[in-house]
Image (cartoon, rainbow, N blue to C red; front, side, top):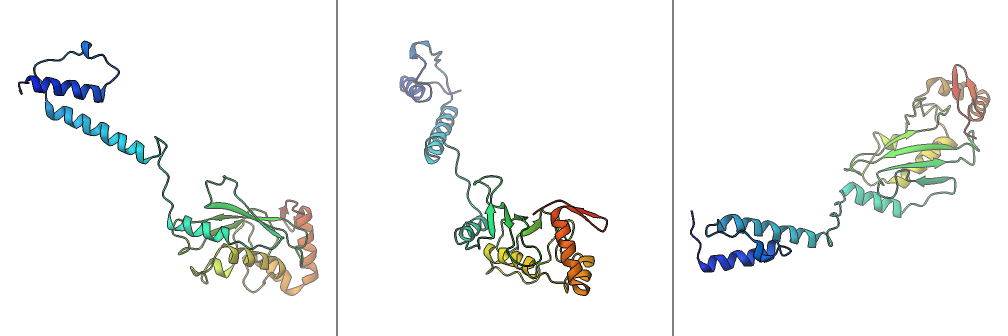
Length: 222
């Protein structure tokens, strides 16, 4: 045990004023024995806490560091140049840019007048990985299956980091103006488009108006 001196006692008082200034000195249960190392550790912890609070802007939570994917996505969004038929929204608010929705309203072709919404999920390693895109709107389309999976080459084998969100949205819009029966996800719809375009058009209009095409029911989206 370390035996304290008068100098040590003064040191205790000074430490108390730093660590517990609201307590009266006259009420302190000081003894002639103490552990200087333990007090110094406590003092260090207090000083460290004060430093952290100062760094965090007067006690505010630290700002979350953005991933490379988030930084690139910010750039993509700031540079969007969409046609009036396309719009973007953030259902989870401005603090979650990695999950958003794109709505397309074709102004030409088979799907004229329809409204189709797609969800985008962006990974933290974007643009080295393509966004995950699904169609929320059930649609009769050769390149979109009934579960919302999308057949678009730039979302698969032709994806490159130089591509961006703007490119994908234009690609989705192109699917509605020029559906492709040669690379189908919905093979039945693709076969009708290939063999009987007039019947395909009729099926599309029926689906968008809300009704059955074959055994499948489609919700109105027009």
